[in-house]
Amino acid sequence: KNQVEQSPQSLIILEGKNCTLQCNYTVSPFSNLRWYKQDTGRGPVSLTIMTFSENTKSNGRYTATLDADTKQSSLHITASQLSDSASYICVVGVLNSGGYQKVTFGTGTKLQVIP
Amino acid sequence: DAGVIQSPRHEVTEMGQEVTLRCKPISGHDYLFWYRQTMMRGLELLIYFNNNVPIDDSGMPEDRFSAKMPNASFSTLKIQPSEPRDSAVYFCASSSGAEGSDTQYFGPGTRLTVL
Image (cartoon, rainbow over all chains, first blue to last red; front, top):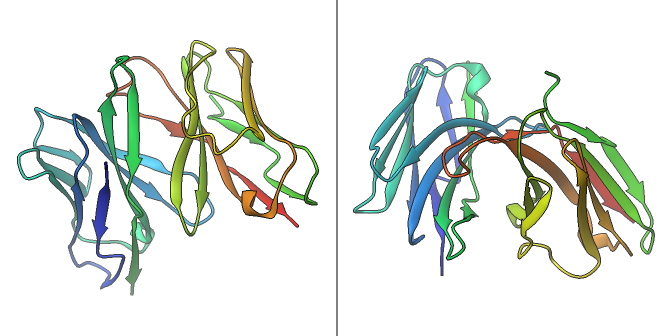
């Protein structure tokens, strides 16, 4: 069964500190992996998209890594800010037999950055 | 561009009533996605369209749910009859180009409460 597990479920860090969120998946055949940020009461916003051949991608203070061999991804947030408080969702895509994508969502990590 | 537009933003209805959610994708995007998000199940893909054609509706929970895309600038998700367990936030998203690597842009969501 295709699964995407995220850890930790929730995290509280001090403003200015770094943190790393984890995503492990059993999805196969792998197509791509996306990280989304979702502020409370709003729709998700894409942070990064990585395909099989990419092992790192940055978007400002956000850096995602991908190890397709171990089926693990991480999202590293550098010098956290209060505005980073949100849920972070890992989404893994597979290509089905028709050539179209199916996605499996992680349950998210809820990050709270405190002053 | 105004982004993905969804209406209504909030909907409260009684069990058994018909509910219609509306979405206007970003102009020029040829993929449109409908998602549902609940605390228990997280984010789930219900159905997606490519060039107004439904590609994968395997996420639609049951026959009470139906989605249409009569043209490139409008889609509806209908629930008839609605049930309390349908209460959730429903998101519409759109993207363009190669499905596996393009960013999906989410609308603000419709918060549905079925009493």
